[in-house]
Image 1 (cartoon, each protein chain N blue to C red):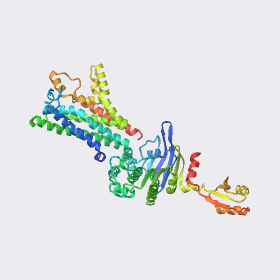
Image 2 (image 1 turned 60 degrees about the horizontal axis):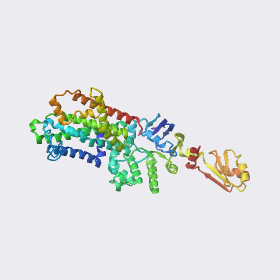
Image 3 (image 1 turned 180 degrees about the vertical axis):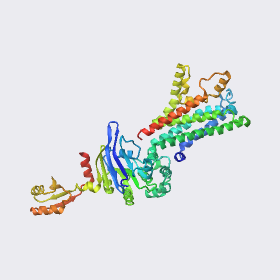
Image 4 (image 1 turned 180 degrees about the horizontal axis):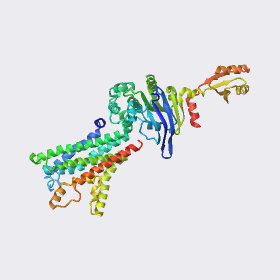
Length: 265
Length: 296
């Protein structure tokens, strides 16, 4: 296991795209939140006239949910990175070479899944550190950790996104088309299907779509607060969303495994 | 170990195209085994199957007396089709990845880069390499861990004449060191110069396989000529052991039993009152044999 991951690290440690994409996530996530926290960016207007309604969401009670929501947007950088790294193996035919040199097909698959797991853990740790910094700046450390379940949801969400990105990369093999499909699905197709399903049925089954089910764990911070205030009853619990998210990850694994073991390279 | 590689009834189709049909042969240890065939004959498909990047529809293969396939692949050095490396990494770092997967040969990087003439460029990124340098790096990678068995698919692809000669010498040197080399090529000259054994494929069919000198020896031709060509034709056609006679450009081409020597032919002609003006034993080149076989 360790050896597989170590070899994946050898492949990316000198890859400029890896550092650029990971760097974008690492820099933009705190910078974006810093701007909101300090009132540089406001909802409902720009500059000095806007109303800043999110700047209170950085105390420990809300910071995990808040950062989690923004992370669900910024994880796209890492998802694209997963696609690029994986499709590179097809472009360079290095996946073939890895097998020729002695990996089994299953080891090729597991090396990438270990990378996905490591990136999800890395994302969670990074958000944790960022959360502590924002929390400490806006709140007393006595209130740490606050509503920390949000951090676990960030792990689930990033694992779901990266696993999905890996599956798309294995299915489409070329980076351009795979990235296009990823965005098309994430931004349009899933919203369309979800909207239709939720409109058609009483039960919001559309919320259980592959990526949406994790997004539901980390809703827009104010919606979460508003829901608490008006005490609306959720039809699907967070636990259910976690279980369904993990079920989708299992589906990505099974489909990608089937794809890699059965097809010619 | 009786065989390095044993291929048993391997078949493979791509949709309606049958790329390999029931191919069976063994590769003995210490041989330079050439897999020959025109483009599209199934050479690379066959190598792809024995290296597990392609799935055979039927049949099986055994490496090194039944060793698990992944362990066998780690212990041999293989170059399939094109040099496959990470474009953004140097030769040095690329070989580190290959050695890590093979679980051997990390300390051989300097030796193999020296051997293939790439040491000076070891820190250059793969994408800056010429086609010939990429091919050399692929060969360097196969040598990591000093494997006993090497698989080369068109090893001299993209090399200049000097490079081709160097790689040919390298292959012969490796064979002298006792290594078994399995090599696919459509370059007959290359195979003829270095191979001890050969298997010839045509559109997925195995036409023949065996030792190069055995495959070729029975096909030797004798070319003779005399002032009275008509008399010579009439005489030699009835000589025992002569199978066929063909008249060509004022001389006769004979196909004879292997035990018939040029001396016997000469003596036979003298006994029949013919003085030969021309007598030469022509070893049939692999190229002639190959074209004959693949055009049938």
